[in-house]
Image (cartoon, rainbow, N blue to C red; front, top):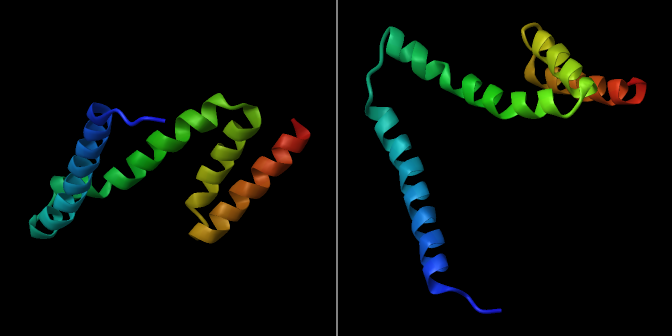
Length: 99
């Protein structure tokens, strides 16, 4: 197996840029003073990214997963994280067995 140096260089460059953008975010975020709407927008980023990752999978894999995702989202407002994860896992297992 031979390694194409152009491809290897491109992958290495992308890895370096990705690493530095993540590190830069940590350094810049500590220096930002946010208030009001900007703080609310930054606080909404983690749940928005989580939904953007989970929703396509939950809604395209089948009815059991979609219903389990809805149950888990409902429970997430009332229970702590570990209990929410447990309810999600149990609900998807049970629904896969039933549906």
